[in-house]
Length: 226
Figure 1 (tube, rainbow, N blue to C red):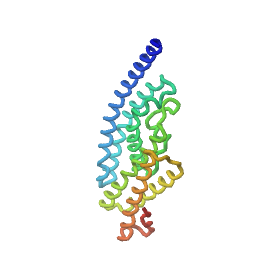
Figure 2: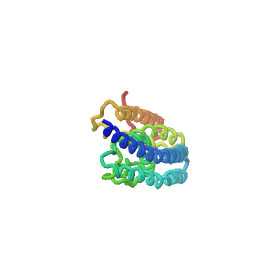
Figure 3: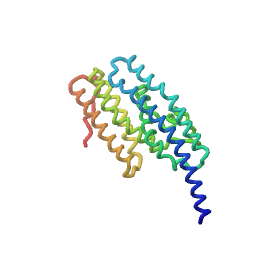
Figure 4: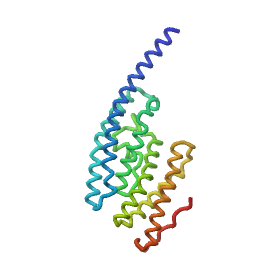
């Protein structure tokens, strides 16, 4: 019995040491994410393309720091094959936000979805060593939908009447893609449900812009039913 518990003690001490190393990295990651998120806020009020570009470039300047920190996490996990999900909860919430930030910046740049593999490439992680969990990626995408209605309202206020149409098309495609998934009644399902209402908000703005005659002649869809 004593030998067994001595072995347990050794394993627990080793696990505790690993968690301390991970927490130190996560503490730095929290700081970088917080600053990157703050740097992106002015995009809601940018009045020129140049101003928006400067905001995006500032946000992108933090990506090398993200790469460094995810590399450190990968190094810790690399020596412990098969234990990724044992420690995954330590960086899960931060990864949701990181995916959101990278995807939002990418959409503002291209009006396109940032793929899962592109996220891993941006962060410099190798899937065979340290992958970005698919649910973390999907939750991060859902977080974009909660940011876009605010962005649309601000853009319309600034006189950009095409923005609601662009965002509506993007969120409609994203909503349709999510419907392919068989989601359980968990956090991801709740975030997906929120996406539906975010899309409805954007469609209401688009419809309002259309009936006020502020949009070009292409028809705007009526807001989706609740």
